[in-house]
Length: 130
Image 1 (cartoon, rainbow, N blue to C red):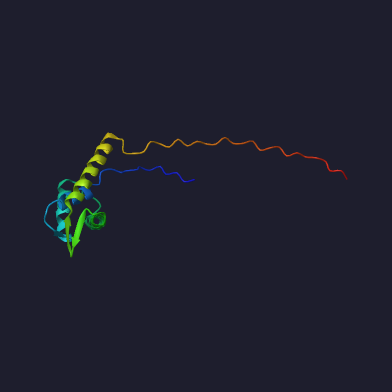
Image 2 (image 1 turned 180 degrees about the vertical axis):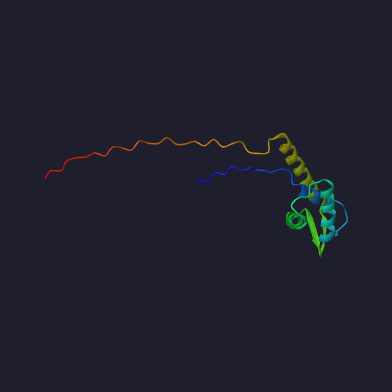
């Protein structure tokens, strides 16, 4: 039986939140311009860590997840936020951030019930008639 001792949520996802806030504007943007704006905003908030290339990869993956989830729409090489989807995402993110701040973001620890160990039955030794 494998048990994991990890967090169920590490903390607020600043990259996704910043991406959603940039996509909430009405203007369509190509990925390079979108990355430049998100990177500049994250650096201003001192939330850009892990290097620029790693951030570019994370942002591209999150952007593709946004497109698949219906939060953003891709037309050619340009991305535009879907207002209703972005509102839903930001509301969910705000709820999760509030839970994280309150400390109720993780599941309660599991109570592992250890079954009692049964005593082995003594073997009956009987003499065989010869």
